Structure formats: structure tokens, C-alpha cells
Amino acid sequence: MTSRAPRRSIRARRARSAAMVALTVVAALLATLPLVLILGLLLKQGASSLNWAFFTAMPKPVGETGGGMANALAGTLMLIAIASAIGLPVGIGAGMYLAEHRGGRLASVVRFLSDVLNGLPSIVVGIFAWQFLVRPVKHFSALAGGIALAAMMIPLVARATEEMIRLVPNSLREAALALGYPRWRTSLTVVLRTALPGIVTGALVAVARIAGETAPLLFTAFGNQFWSTSLTQPISALPLQIFSYAISPYEEWHSLAWAGALVLLALVLVISLIARYVTRSRFGHGHD
Amino acid sequence: MASTQLHGASVGDRIYRYTTTAFALSIPLLLVLLAFEVAVAAWPALKAFHLGFLTSSAWDAVNGTFGAAPAIYGTIVSSLLALLIATPLAIGVAIFLSEFAPSWLRQPVAFLVDLLAAIPSVVYGLWGIFVLVPFLREQVMPFLADRLHLGDTPLFSGPAYGPSMLAAGLILAIMVLPYISSVTREVLMAVPRSQREAALALGATRWEMIWGAVLPYASSGVMGSVILGLGRALGETMAVTMVIGNRHEISSSLFAPGYTMASVIANEFSEATNDMHLSALMAVGAVLLAITLMVNIIARWLVWRVERRGQA
Image (cartoon, rainbow over the protein chains, first blue to last red):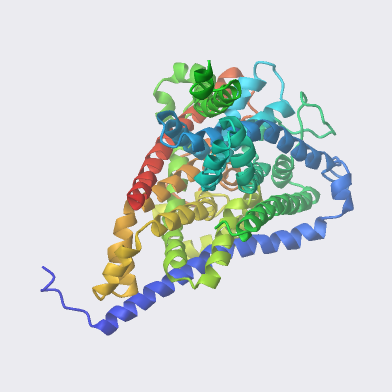
């Protein structure tokens, strides 16, 4: 079959190969281009409208200049705290189960379903939290927002914890058991402690992921123009505030949206960088 | 009673086992509860409109008739457009990183591409509103319609508003690219070295090695990564809501504004006044949930197949 096709010379084949390699380089350049464009503009627009008042002042009504997003910043931090308080223990516990029952049937089902849960649109999680937590009590609340975000964290943290615990050498576990440690103490004080830096990284990655989430909050935390730290009241969040300012028709609010986006992205990136640093210092000690 | 000490689990062990099992069970429980609650919220609208909900284009909150066809159409078109743009690029990046990149470049480029996935959706939307949409309106759309004389074809007809299916597809392409490329890269790295060495030993060039020996081996995993990207694109909310133009209409033109399932829900939720309108929005959410569940299950299965073969 191939004998009829003209055989390409080796030079033509090499040229073709080089061309394709060059195309993958172009793809890499094109893929990083939007990142450069977005970061560049964000720095330019955000920095020019960012000032101290942004962090300390409350939003001003339309028409008045100035104002900040102090309540949205506090709201985002509070939502992250609620989500972590619920999502981290459950996620880490589930991850420990997954790592200790590697081949078990329940473990494979849980592993698969947590990957599926992780791929679901965040807006669907928002609808769920609204129907489950907001509708019965008839008002939006910070707690519902935090729980919606926790639901998104759990599968992420569980899978990260599992991977990290798997890296702990089995000999360590066996040594502890041989010394007469009960299983639970072995798991908590030897295995979990050894895997801790990796788990911290996984937890931070999950926090970075939910910090910028907007869609679930539309149905739960809802947003609030005033200062609030109550669990049962609607609360503002940075992404919600950016969204409502961005689609508003006012110049003043647009520049606040840019400043908010810069702060939000900085928050997400700082958390991600800390996450990377924690793992690096771990692997720096010769674990890789 | 020494035997219970040796064989049976101690109290501490039992507590530990029950606690971790309960945490693990919370994940399936959460998923079931989620599906149940969404179905409950959607039920009144699904009962009132039956299958017509999926095929009708009438969306009239005042008269209480709802059909999700334009949103379903918009979701599928914008996601396919995004995949069409992102897939070749993402596979190219993955091949570059796993096969060709010098080791000093590999980490930084992979980090930059992963960073794209870290940018919050609402920030993409902000950039979309103030940069991408004006750029499309003033440069790209006139260029496509007038310079390339594509204005008479159905795909590129109509006035250039800016907010459009095209804008949604482009922003989605940027957003799903890192997901496709990072899973593809993992799948490519799971391809055994011997596969590559055998091709090179037979005299293949570097590209022939990739095309003939690496990609066929990884194909179902690459397919899985693309479907995973599809899952992301289908459910992406904020950025799309901000650039798609939000209109309940099916138009063949990519220049025309449209709607996706997620953006209808996000956009109309706070304005919905009557119960049927709310329930119709939740029914759109239920359809979205059903579609993304299916897409995710298929994708996970495909990726899992390659990774298992790589380990064996």
C-alpha cells in the first residue's frame, strides 16, 4: 500500500519535523500571550485606581467619588474562613480514608465521585446551596455562601491529601506499628505529620480556587452594600463586588472594579505561591 | 481477653476508622444531595413544560412560558467554538512541554500556562468587557465581514455589536486551554519511553515519533482531556455572562448576542419575581447538571484508561 506513495526524502521529512516542532513553540507562545495581556492591563488599570481608601473605605453611592471595598474584602476573608473550617477537616479525613483503603471498592467509588464533583459547574453548587440552605430560611446568608464554597473544596482537598499520604513510605508506618503504636496514632502522628507540608499545599490550592468564585455566591452570600460580619446576614465578597461594578454604567465604578480585580488576583497568586513554596521546601529535604 | 487486644481493634482505632469512613462517605452523599435538591427546585417547571422546555424558544417571564432551547444552543455553540480554538493550541503546548522544551524552560512555561487556570472567572469577564469586546467590535468583526467578505455568510452576518457568541467562545477558549493542556501533558508523560525509543530506532524523525508512536498510544487520554475541557466550558458562568450579550434568541451568526445555560441563571436569578420563573431557571440548572455529569463521567473514564495502561 505504501509502496505506491512517493517516498519522501529524509531532508523533506526532517524539514517537516522541524516545522511541526516550531508550530508547538508557536502554540506555547500563543497560549501565554493572553496571560501577559491580562496581567499587564490589570497592573496598569488596577494600580492607577488602587489607593489606601480601597482597603479601608466603604462603597460610596453612585455619583460620589472615592469609596472602597472594605466590606467586600472582609466578606471574602470571612467566606474563606467558613469554607475552610468545614471543607478542610472533611476533605482531609476523606483523603486519609482514600489513602488507607487504596484498592477498596468504596474508596474507588468515592475517588471517582469526588473527581466528578470537582468537575461540576460552580453555579450548580450555588443552586444546590440556595435550595438547601437559603430557601427554607427565606434569606441569604454568609453561612450558606461558606458552605457552598466548602462543598467545592472537599473533593479538591480529599484528592490532594490522598496523593500526599501515598508519598509517605510504608516503612515509616510499619516502624510505628512495630513499636506498638495503635493504628489511629500511627495515622495521625506519624503518617499525617509526615505528609503535612503536602497537605498544606493542597489546602492552599483549594483556598486559592474558591477565593475567586463568584457564581455560587450569587445564590447564597448575595452581596451587601454595608458592613456585616454576621453569619446569618447577606455578606459582600470581592468577586461579587467586581461583577456588579463591572457591568454598571459608571466610570468611577469601573476603575474600582479594576482595583478589586488586581487585589483579588494578588490574593489568589500569593496563596498559590505560598502553596508552591511549602512543597518545594519539603522536596528540598530529599524526598523527591 | 488478651486476644481482643491483639486481633480486635482498640476503641481509638474504631473511632478513627468510623470517623474517616464518615468523611469519605460525605462525598457521595454530597453529590446525591446536590442532584436531589437541584431536581426539587426544577420540578415545578419541568412538570409544567415537559420536554417542550428543551425545544421551545419562548422565554417570557411575564406570561410564564419558558423554553430553554436558545440557552442550550448557545451553551453548545460557545463551548464547541472554544474547543475548536483551544484544542490544537493546548495539545501543541503539551507536546512542546513534554517532548521538546529544554528542561530550563519546561517549569516556567508550565507555570505560566497553569496560571491561566488560577485567574478568577470574574477577572476574565472584566477583561472581556473592556478589552476583548471592544477589540472584536472595532477590529476583528469589521475585518472578517468587510475585508474577507465573509459578511454575507450566515456565520458572520449581522451588525457588529461586540458582545456576542464569538466573544464568549474566545474567552472560553482561553479559560479551558490550561485544563486541556495540563491533562494532555500528564497523559503524554504516562506514555512509556520504550514507545518513543522504538520509533526513533526505526529511523523516525522527532515529529514522526510523536505522530506515529506517542499520540496514538495516548489518544484516548487526549480525548478525555478535551472532554474535560468541554465540561469546564459548558458550566463556565461569570466570564460568559459578561460578554455574550444575554439574549434569548437562536442565531446562526457568531456576531449575534446569545445566552448560555449558566449565564441565564446567573443573569436572571436576582430579577426573577414569580415562582415559575425561578423554577424555570433551576430547571435550566438541572439540564446543565445532567449534561456536565455525563460529560465528566465519560472524560474521567477515558483518562483513567490510559493512566491504568501506563502503569501496567
